Length: 313
Image (cartoon, rainbow, N blue to C red):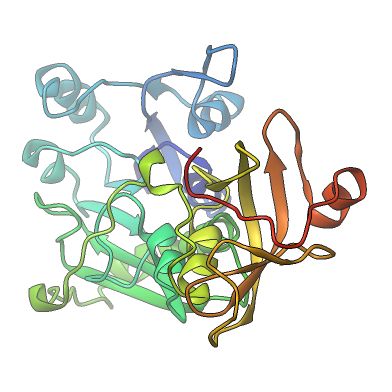
């Protein structure tokens, strides 16, 4: 099958790779424009662009397909793909493109739709402490992740699994489900199912103003926040006035404690009191230092029992 692929981050690469391995002809890749990255603000290619160039696939990088339809619609019409596959592209497709391919535009989405439409479904799955996440393949429509569902696969969230770990796992689940979806569509074995709007929820993009840890919340919420914001943008608090990013934690207890929220109650393993219960940090990054396990950090810089962590400087 002739396919145009649209995607940007690492989540999309297993799907693109699976299409190639299953004999589909990738005519072109559309991905987001190059952006500055890192401390040096050097211009960097998206992971999908790097993969496409390594496999000698033509790459297109429109700023906006909706605003540049006159430029890119003729290109797609010349390619005349049987299908457009979208996986975490991050751009809205105009109706002229949605209606172009024979089999339509198929999206690989990181949730069990209609739950968690939007940019960060996997992160919100972990932030909200859901027991299950998953993947849905859908026939794209004009609304945001509102199209008819084709196939889905439910995946249990592991204990203490970070959003980035679930993101990586689901990228491969999505790739496998995409191939099953394409095979089913071609064979006429899939009946699209409309989403139930009453069950729909939205998963907005994560922002830096979400990062501060509020220790007055129950330990379960603090724990899920740490896991849900890992690896990026990363939950954080302040120790002796300096920022401390927290990438991993474990839930120690859920009952009431005698300590005020944010107080370190065990200096040997960095257990912290919350509004209800306690959490233990297991992976952190101190200001001006590298990311490391808490055991390594405490060997070089012990903390005092009774020290209070704050949400802001």
